[in-house]
Image (cartoon, rainbow over all chains, first blue to last red; front, top):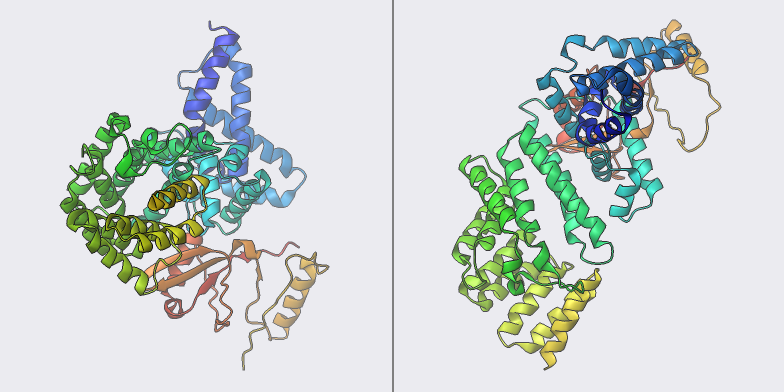
Amino acid sequence: MATTGSIEERLSELYFAESRRVLATLIRLLGDFDAAEEALHDAFRAALEQWPRDGVPASPRAWLVSAGRFKAIDAMRRRARFDPLDEIADEAALGVVDPAAWTEEESVEDDRLRLIFTCCHPALAPDAQVALTLREVCGLKTEEIARAFLTPAPTIAQRIVRAKGKIRDARIPYQVPSPAELPERLEAVLRVIYLVFNEGYAASSGTALMRHDLSAEAIRLGRLLVELLPQPEARGLLALMLLHESRRAARATSTGELVLLDDQDRSLWDRQQIAEGVRLVERALASRRFGAYSIQAAIAAVHAEASSVEATDWVEIVGLYDVLQRLDPSPVVELNRAVAVAMRDGPAAGVAIIDSILGRGDLGDYRPAHAARAELCRQLGNTAEARSSYTRALSLARQEPERRLLERRLAELSK
Amino acid sequence: MKYLCLVYMDPGKPSAIADSECMACGDGLRQNGQLIAAEALQSVDTATTVRVRNGKLSVTDGPFAETKEKLAGFYLIDANDLNDAIQVAAKIPPAREGSVEVRPVRQLRV
């Protein structure tokens, strides 16, 4: 028989590996997020009491689900004695449960998808979708989410409480969307995951370490989604995140200075992440049902496979931007295409496109547009234009490493 | 002639009006033959705004916030859940030009 010490270890492993699955099933069985969270903790507490005495059950997850459900019903009954109205509501909520389907493998995996789609429901505010997903699907503590987003913990707590309130009161169903709704709803889930990733990726100073965890969390979410719902765009997004993440070590110097793609030491790129990203993007593209994430990942893959800026297949990259511009037209895509055109046809061609974007009033306040224009003007030897664009970019830069990079570039112009 | 009576309250202020009083009012009007339908609504926190633009459904959290758009009509519908209600709301023709705010009805507590 196992000792108490090893059972505690086993339980903490189980908590890490299974608590989100158990929670997802308990939400379905109990029809309420708060009741399910309470039941989850009660179930682990019961395991800590009973397993040293009775041994670890054959199927720990099923045991935890059933213990949690029992504790929750017990709690509802106790409350019902004081509040007869709730009794009717609770009995109704429990009546929809089919006990036979509790812990069947298939429905349990569906529960995790139900949880993801419910947390990312478009009727919830976007920042609430992010907080709720990190809290319920990833199991992050409110304080951890608050630190990662540089937001006060009570604000995050408030968002989560409000979102759960809306799920309950407006009756957002705990469902995987129907095939007809799936494309739009999947888009919302992918948006949340990519937002979490970018929040971690964009940070390059100060709290960089903690925010890096956010990128890792997003990749974990992306993997989970591909495992549960292997749609081309889910693969495309995972590929895109892995390919960006592969450059992390090369993106900043040890003192936190930004290094642009052209100047990165490509030997620092993570080959394993690149290989996985490339495999995923190839599968996504082969499906012919890919979207904007897959194309962006394909562009990142072309960069990842080139040994240098000069060796990059810019013809291929311009072609991919043309596809992206058709799928998801935006001035930002046009700008990125302009930079690729400059690499293919020379800086003057790039400046001409950027000037036409700025000339029609788009991207006037978008720092990368002015920074790219400045860089191309510098390459053309047009110092005056380069200086004015760098100065404009600097006035729009919000993060310190960005500012320092632009200041260095401006100083170099004077040499 | 039918008239729609819209009820506005400040959600930030505690209300002294009991649900039982509202229920009694409704019962009285119904007996007089003056009431067609009356419901209390859940708080504005539960609101969802539905729009259809170029055939694409857009769903956002919160009440409709355009100051130029004014209340132009209403549908009281029966739906299984919010997803179902959103699908119905998307079929209401003005969803293509304006907005349809979807708000759950609240059971009076009496």
